[in-house]
Amino acid sequence: MWGRRRRWAGPGGGGGLEELRARRREREAALRKARRQEQLVSKRLLREDTAEQGGQDGAETLPDPLSEDEVLQLLRGVQRGSEDRKGSLSRLRWALQNKETQQKFVRLDGSIRTLIGLFTSSLADMQMEAARCLHELSHSSDPAVAEACLPVTSYLLTYLSGHSVEFTELCLYTLGNLVVESEAVRKQLLPQGIIPVLASCIQSPHEAVLEGLGYVLSQLLQAKEAPAEIVPLVLDSVLPQHMLRLVCSGLRAGTGAAVEFAWCLHYIVCSHTANAALLSLGAFPALASLFLEMASEIPQEAPEGLELLVCPVLRCLSNLLAEEMGCHLQVQDERLLIALFLILQSFLPQHPFMAQECLWLLNNLTADKPFFCSALLSLDLLPALLQLLSCSQMASVLVLTVLCNIAEKGPPYCQQLHQQQALPLLLPTLVLPDPQVVGQCLELLHLLFLHCPEAAADFLGQGGHRALEQHQSTPELQARARALLDMLGQPLGATTAFSPCQPTLSAFS
Image (cartoon, rainbow, N blue to C red):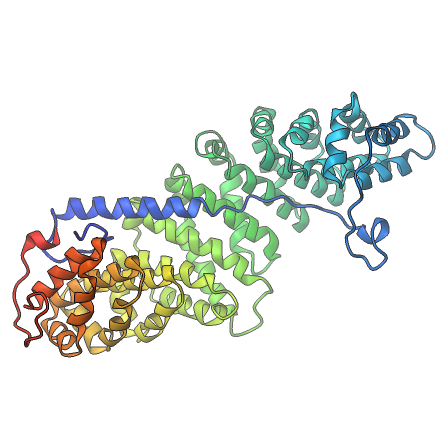
């Protein structure tokens, strides 16, 4: 009945250490699956002249769809080679902002071939306009449009070196957009050598190029085939060490590239195929140092958008700790706890999602390591933690999970939780309509009653048994509620004084 526990159980409960580990892994797998589903697959559009083609005030105005004859006329204007070819290309680019026009254009015989011819020409202005046309096509949500662009991928890779920063950036975002939409594009790019090309580009001194490269790589790493086909190629290149370097220098350089590569590292961690390699590169201590540095920046002039970097760094640290090998990381730095609560204090009002991100790391820090449980109590961080019970449903579950991690460490920890007035804040949680939150609260009460009889007596004195009785009709809670009533020495519906009794092992297996 207590099978939902993660990394905690009363001494002697369950089937021993191996069963507890199995339960922990099962819950971690579910949580990691949920995180992998929260991916950032999106397309980027580099378009700087909407005021020129659109409204006078600079607001974006999309063109109306063209007829097939109008699209054909535009294509012929581009093919003729007249002096106004650049103007025709500009008009084509403007027209290709419309989805229907995009579909009509790629269906025309020779349309993509014409753009490729101009894209590979020696005339820089024509080349740039053709690249912008291809970029507009890459932004289409129609997979057929992306697959029509298959012939251009090798040229896009070729032009990632030796051209202007603007042109390279445009090629990168075009590649990234195509990667999002089409598995056929991804399967073509891998044998064409996209990973070695990106590995060469990652040493560029230009922030715009690095940010575009991070975008391409993050889209590749989110593909369903990434763990088997893409991550191994990335690990065999110089990309991981450079990604780690760029992430950790994000506060000193531009944060844009650091954010992109931090998400790349997160997706690699979630693939479960590369964590040994990342740990061997010193990823955990490097990212932990960066996290401490970010927290120290908060009271001063924190860079704008710092929360965008904090989030993937938190996820990397959390998921590295959640891995089997992460349990053996020798992490004993109480500054991580202080940094977590500084981040929460700073970002929570404007960015409520940060509560869940920080609590996920706090949960994994306290799950197997008594050091962080002791530090959280000795640094008097428990009141700040308990305040997060009201943030959200998931935050409540994670706060209670952290408290369970602490209580599982034994009587001294439960006594401190009791002395620091955790119990009065748990009583309102018991009457919430959310079975998951209440269930986690019951887990915590079980540990407190088991290790600290004074907590059970106080709970009874505060009328807590009446809250337990309310859950006798809730299928997923009634067995645990009854077991806690038995621990309190209370038969169903009774309100007599507390008479301690030792719980049976079977009740908590």
